[in-house]
Length: 244
Image (cartoon, rainbow, N blue to C red):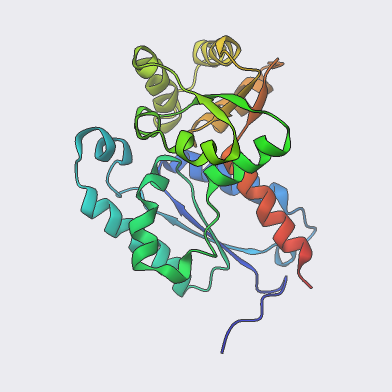
């Protein structure tokens, strides 16, 4: 018997741990997106903080442990399906490169997974923006997954060159290793402002954590900043509000 989804049993699943601090902050954002006076007035959230999953970036750059990575993603999504999750988010942009084999193994997951790259693309399209600067990991940039998904939407993606990879990696590691400093915050602010487009995508799940620190520091961006995780969160909230 199929589950009748209501606000009382609506369940969100997160494939996390890629990295763990980004997942932790995203859980906090989910709680804030569903304000409640009592805990039981929020939807259930199941997080698989799969921190031992192989590196997505190394899989892209060096073709390292790809089959293991795909199997681990399949296992995680399968566990969330078995736990009764109604919506599933992969909290890592690069992991979406490896989503097709997961869906081949688990076709029943496709309507439940919120593809965060497609979600932010629709938001950019709705805003009437046709050119955007991407900030992402070297793995995400090299696969051109944003370009591939955005081309049919009529959105041009301008990605950093390889000369920026070290800088981008240092931003990511400042969150993964919890080594965020004032200098890193200022450098990140300057990097956003240096992007060639009026709109920017935070295309790595560590970047929204760093961006939030910038805003707390008083940063006032001149760019329109888009966050794939926020686009997915907006879908979760809309789904929930539509339920009885």
